[in-house]
Image (cartoon, rainbow, N blue to C red; front, top):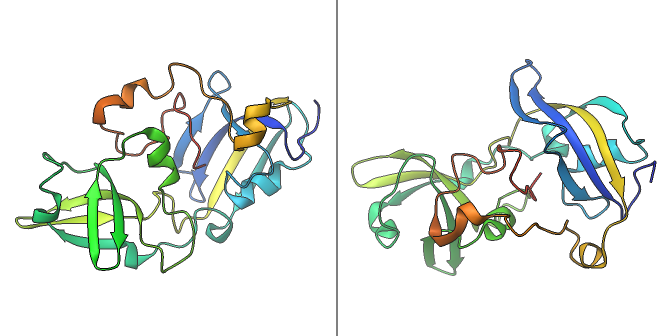
Length: 210
């Protein structure tokens, strides 16, 4: 395959920067990011920019936040009583929690799998949907400040991209819309282990939220 089209599996290497030039993330050719094109599993601005690109092509694209990770939503910053987190046990800055809300009942828990973490990220603009992944930003005496915004929310971004591979996906990849995972994927996240300060910044991780 020489050209990126819908329903093809694409591997890219990239450097992600703010408009100031500050590097936020780097994904090398040796550990590229892999996704299925046309399934809306990466930010709209980047997927649009990748359409029609050739194998081994390199390019830069500036993506405004509205076509990226959306605006920074203040309503996703919550002050939570520590009592609500007592079932979790030890907490720390940068810890990610999944919030579920059913009418007046709100519950925080650890994501059971990395898939659950990725799928739970708040990447849409539906202001009525507050369920998702929240990062602990501040720990006070009796309360905790948690933030459900994506780390890059509200940022205009520049991607410097190299197209590493374009392939036919497997049947299961087309069915799910996501690349097949290797046997060792997520081993480090079993048994409720920490997902790190910002899941996805390690290029060896399988990043579905990009």
